[in-house]
Amino acid sequence: MKFFKRGKGFPVLAVIIIAALIAAVFLFLERMELPDDSATRKGRKTMPPKKALKQKTPERRPPAAERREQQIAVIIDDIGFDLGAAEELARIRAPIAFAVLPHTPHAVEAAEILHAAGKEILLHLPMEPRSYPGENPGAGALLADMDEKEIRRQTALDLAAVPYVSGVNNHMGSRFMGDDIRLSVVMDELKKRGLFFVDSRTASDSRGKEAAARARVRFAARSVFIDHTRGYAAALANLTRLPRQGGGGGEPLLMIGHPHPETVRALKEVLPIWQEEGVRIIPVSAYLSASGGKE
Image (cartoon, rainbow, N blue to C red; front, side, top):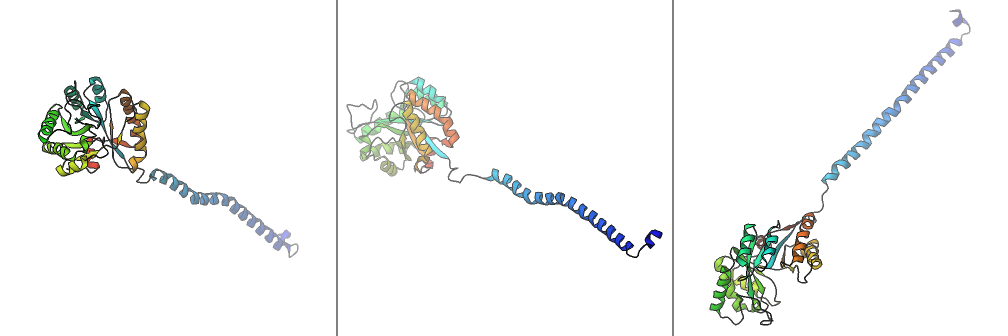
């Protein structure tokens, strides 16, 4: 008590000192809390954008045009001479169609093997080319000097020579395919049997489309020959080039090739490439619907 009685200003100074110390303690404690609270506030502000980026990434998709599936139908012509080639092609797991030449050594047996493997069969109908008789289309050919009765009879014989046919495409025929009158007779026979026609486009002046339309026969035309130039490299280039370009606009494509060893090899090797690139092989009958072929 004597201590506080010494001098009137001393207690005031003590109070000031004590107050300053208390204020310093509170200020220190407040500053110690700020980093934690600041970090929490910053974390709350920055975390949502990071989470949002992770959530949006899987939802990003390419434009619809880039996701469009390219469809291709494939026909292998000239079946009937080499039974081994037919057996090898039958093992390919794809809906490839096969055009069988009538009156060839293995026409019936090849058609049976391919049909048993679930493949679509066409009659590869031989027709007179402009180079005839230097170039012979083979047995059962339709010739430009035949009358209506002969054409009907030969067409019927050729169809009977190949079992399981669902359609017909021409073998050679650069002259016959340009003869509107005679071609109309063929289309009439196909209409009676409910068969479609595929124009191999061996003639620049082909009347196939017009004749098919008059007879109300479903019609399609070849887009490209796989092996117009024979060889593995050429076949593989043709099998990959147009599909990668989207068929000139994404339209279905109809490709025709032959049972050459080089073509068969290229065809086998392109299948996984097509699968990776979104190219799908469809049956010829499905191609007719996709491309607008009408009955």
